[in-house]
Image 1: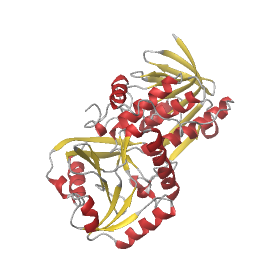
Image 2: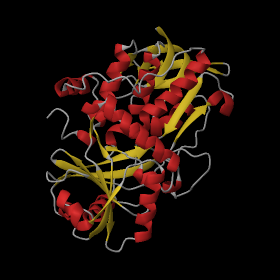
Image 3: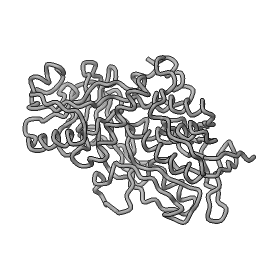
Image 4: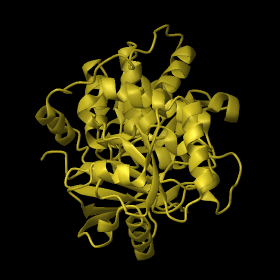
Length: 405
């Protein structure tokens, strides 16, 4: 059995469906395959933050500028998939006040709206905040519901002609000499393509290895803890250098506490350790004391698809959270294959646009990106959105207390 397509996208997380959507809206014939349901990997196992960029403003101003721009885009094109809660960066007693000042200044330099409140003012708006909060930087963070976002993006890709196949794992990429010409897909057979996009995230190394490419991925696991927290309505961040347990994200009647960063060898099999849950809970309680004794609904782990051409050893937090578009013709003398790795949920549309620009240039297709101005389907109908989540088997733990309720 042989199927033909112009572009085969492998990976049904938010980046893969974003690439499929972008290409399909440009008139390209696209097939997307995912080994599980959509959203089964990193996207659905995040803490669900719509980043303003404030988290990265002092360390990665370019990435921060990308975040605030895409934050604004998602509010316009995917209003049913996001909630604009606002965010606090909190200076707790004992935290470095100079770091707080640097964070605020860096946000302003990146074009991120920021307002400084004293602790008492912030607690008037968010009573769950610790009495130890000395100052708060208010930024336009929000919450994103990955299941809805992935499902709506996939639906728009399909509406524009893309074929979306779940539970269709790739066994290997197919080659003709030094050119990738498709993939052998369980349940579909041989899928021939003019170009293949590897959007498998933390598993990108595994797919590339089937044609002898080493991507030098450095996947890291991060623990998330979901607790009952009906009173919280703001994303709470610790204003200190990035560390374990520095973010609390409100989701309906629960909050997601995050996270850790531990490098793993295998993104599909790694220890899920109690110390991570305990550390995350303890550190987050310094910002929101009630979470220390709140009933735990579940703990889950996500794996970040971090990439670096250099080895950082155990310093997993030193690897860029930015995204990388890898042209394997230039990098590895393997034509017909492009890999997109890294990035953030918030910037997935920008990553998809960059990938689609690259692929259409290789194919000789002259068509502009339209995804920044085009509303995703079902945004005014949450029941329809959640039906799409069910249809694509896109449910995940990050927003399980919201989707379908």
